[in-house]
Image 1 (cartoon, rainbow, N blue to C red):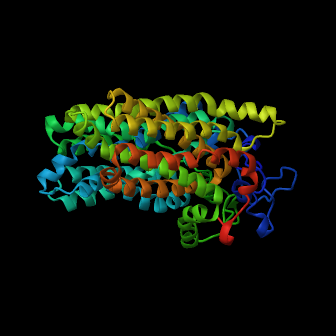
Image 2 (image 1 turned 120 degrees about the vertical axis):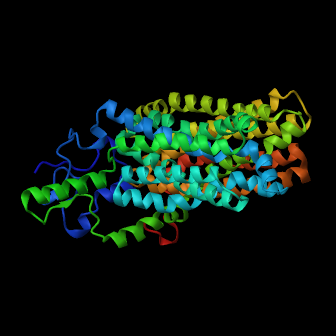
Amino acid sequence: MASIASTAPRSDRAPAGDLEHDAASIHTSNGNVELHNDEKVKDPNIVEFDGPEDPENPLNWTPAKKFTAIAIISFLTFLSPLASTIIAPATEDVLKEFGSTSETLGAFVTSVYLLGYVAGPLVIAPLSEMYGRSIVYQVCTTLFFVFSLAGAVANSLNTLLAFRFLAGLAGACPVTIGAGSIADMVSKENRGGAMAAWALGPMFGPSIGPIAGGYLTPVKGWRWMFWVLAMLTGVSALLTLLLQESYPYIVLKRKTARLQKETGNPELRSALDTGKSTREFFIFSILRPLKMLIGSPVVFLIALYGSITYSYLYLCFTTFPRVFRGQYEFSQSQVGLVYLGIAVGSLVGLIICWALLDRMVASLTKRNGGEPRPEYRLPTVAIGALLVPAGLFLYGWTAEHKAHWFLPILGTGLLGAGMVIGYMASLTYLVDTYTVYAASVSASIVVLRSLMGALLPLAGNSMYNALGVGWGTSVLGFIAVAFIPAPLLLYIYGARIREIRLFGVVF
């Protein structure tokens, strides 16, 4: 039986000592062959890919097949965050229909969706590692469609909040495992561009949502936002049927089952088989995102930074009506257009990532003796770390002094660009570091940033009432300034810090 040394070409393996290396060596503890050493004699009962050009290996899929898969996943990843914010401009209408005047409850109508993002990844990530990416996409997108329909016919505020939460729970799927899907299909050298294309969804979707909601609500009412979402998710549910399995663990598991049947040899086993039962594997996997968040200083620091900047985005979304309707006397539709500042900034940030991420890695690799390191992604993070506080200060003080409306919108554009650059480059850094557990590391980030994104906006109006827009936003800016040195410290010491496991945690 033909085989190769691992489930990915040698150029896509992580440095020795990290999780990908550990996964590649998983059978040595059982006395089996070392998968990462081509020179060792192979166990004939170990099922691997048939050479480095095996078309079953998702890394060897044709460009058209990869493009189709990434395009579908990117559309799903655009639609889910769009649903999170589309209701933001209509909160007054929702509260009026259900007889409430609470500003905090109005913000919660938007942010409760993100609480679904907190719970969903903890289940979605391990399920994708147990049963594969494609089936999880299909089930979650179908549930997303159902809960969007339910939101359109909700007859009470509590019911609407419940369906918003459940929609967020299902909608967390592409945001959680999308990066893992790309890691399955795209080699490390070319991953930055593909990640930038995928990130168009989580970065651009939240900005487009309020624009659509701002125009749709006055014309058709807030319930039509959910009808439109249901139509779009219905189409996306059909598109997921085109997705083929990309997770190497599942691909080899299915190949092993096929060969066992064809050869009548029950001793055959996948090269990535952990030997755990389904129950053991699920329990171990469901805890992995939290273990990575708690046990790895690198994951925690990146997740904390991403969650803070992400919460700033949702704070802006929930307080724009206060600033632009209250201080600038914009109409509801005009307030919707204000979100274009973040949208355009996000697009600019995405272009910068697309242009720099892979080129920066190639340049630094060549300059440092040809040995690639995940830390070569971090100089791009530093650009985003500078733009975020600059955008916050510009937005806060120009709005405080009622300067021309273009200036605070420009500030939100800088915030959007900085957030996208920082998020994209740092996530790609973690995916490069923990490739085999890309879904779990993505889940750990989504959990923390969604929790912050859901809770901080609830305090936004109270903070602005106490401090004003200028100083209130400046507090956020000062916190962002404190994170500016982080990319430099990780660039210098990241390789050492990645080896640290706090509290004896094992992934």
